[in-house]
Structures are given as structure tokens and as C-alpha cells.
Amino acid sequence: MGSEAQEDLTPKRIPMNKADIAGKVQEVLGGTKADAERAVECVIDSITAGLKSGDEVSIAGLGIFSAKARPARTGRNPRTGETIRIAATRTPKFRPAKALKDSVK
Image 1: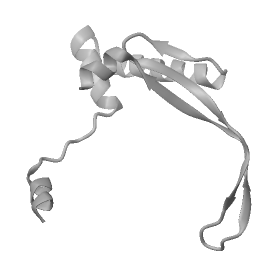
Image 2: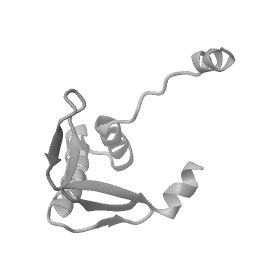
Image 3: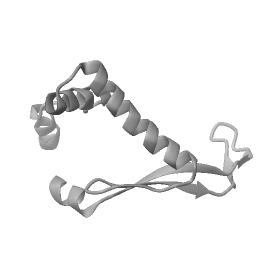
Image 4: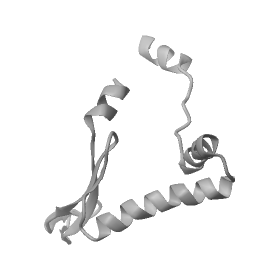
């Protein structure tokens, strides 16, 4: 019960989203909010395009984005218990840079 009371006292943090990042870009670079939003969207699109083409995307001080291949496998339908085949897929992966790890400590 003591830990539950402690959790109630800590304020809820709102996660940073794309609009917040665009706002920071606008503060630093100036210009319009629409320009800042296009810049953020361009960065995200560039990372996505790189991953789709099979490239690693390395951003110094932030980390490395890559696409990891996951082989086909068998699984179970939790409702029926039936064995099912799960297709092979690729999933995004992120490895943080040392500078990012150190700054979060």
C-alpha cells in the first residue's frame, strides 16, 4: 500500500509528440510552424524510406535505426489453442548512441 500511495503523488508526464518536436524546431530556427512541421516530417520520412530500402540510418548522438528480419514461425491462437503459421516480417529496431544513453542517466 505504501508504494501505491507514492505513485499517486507523482505527477503524470505527458509524452512528447511530433507537434511538440515541430514547436522546438520552430523555436530554434524561426520561420513558420508549417515549415517546422514539414522539416520534422521530412526527417521521419527519410528514416522510414531508408529502413524500407534495407539501409541502416545512423544519426550521430542519437542512434542507429535498422530493420530486423524476423523469420516465419509457428504460434498459437490464444482463444482456440490452434497452431497457426506466422509469416516472416521485418520490424524496425533502434540502438541508442552512447551520448544518448549518457544524457538520460
